[in-house]
Length: 580
Image 1 (cartoon, rainbow, N blue to C red):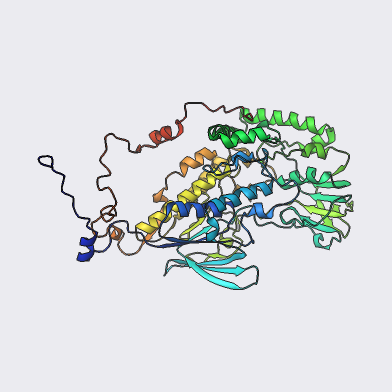
Image 2 (cartoon, rainbow, N blue to C red):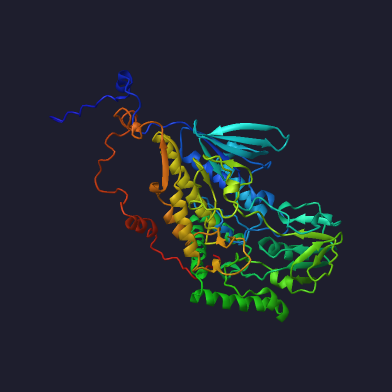
């Protein structure tokens, strides 16, 4: 620039490269079609993340139910609620100041996700009453061919996509217990995950099978209606409030503070989250905190049971956390009440009148509730045929070995949200689902901008992780002897090999060397015509890298971690969480 004259401005070169026929600039986006299985919490998250982060895409979420919400739409049994504090069961970026209580009901959680969908207009991606019934990989065309059944009229349609994301959920495929004669029972047979709202329990003798999370929640809820309850229990279980916190109904004033003071709500959420994450050391076998926790919970359970016989049966000898810890608000007190009969041991069969124990005793009941959970094998509920022609249901018949809860070898361009060894019992779960969604969509971005045909985790990466998992789990309570859905054939298939924060940091950046990539032609063809996307954008700043100081992101993990986790001067109390 001479004599104060303005600098010469170069003409945007988009017309030049177009005239010369030089093709596309670097990182030219290809259109991507994504099919997401499910419109529950995970499916809605995928829709939100796609909408926020992508430009040239099509997305459809096929949902088998007539509405969104997944497990929170389906599970409406009496007492159904979140078994973690509700303020830790929100997306990290989407607080809910209106939670009514610490442990919110299933209907309230459903309303949270429905409100989330409406706020961001995610319903436009969803096709309800459409159940994915099969998916086959077409390697020639690099597409997933997907079969979908209309659950309203039974018709079958076909669709295809570049990327298939299975967000169908783990606690979504309920099952009846495998008990002889169950369906010969002449009374009313119910399952907690498929509840008949028309059934009146008033004055009835109710039988309850199961003392997992749903059984623990439903018992106190139905006790006020039933005249008598016989509950069938085979295994002891730890029952405790999370963080030693009983159920609390938030007052109008507390909710007003949450609504009017986002900083106060954020502080409260962080305190809860920090305390919840602080549970991780409890899962280390034989640690001092594990022993202290077991001693404290034993005292609490004895105080509520006040029965030597029940204490002997219900309080476990295995470590806290071997089975999922359930808050169980009111459960122990109800179990010890005169209205409840505890039938300990297995059920041999079910007669027309009711369950028959292994000792031959028959227990006639008017209504029989099965709180027996879901198929948690991780085997997909529909055939998924991969590159080698194998059905993932068959491949995972024994143990579902996956890559970091996210992907499977031999199944290209396929992701799971909440797959095997996701951090389900390690701490806050929704944060982990966010990390999985982010990881998957970073891979989609690379597919879209680098001329990738397909990608999948390497077999050796999956095998190495399985070896690490099996070795690591031996030092945790999850490897101990207990009847737990966390395990299959002796392998811990649910929970991650570390804390939830550990998982978030492991997932922060994709490990591309763990993946096999196939390209469309030359792997460097995406470099294009020598121009950048910036140079063909007439509104872009061509000198965006020139600045007054170095404010660029840190290059090392250490510095990035410190920058992101030391943002608040106020230290969060990791041991005490109080309602404001």
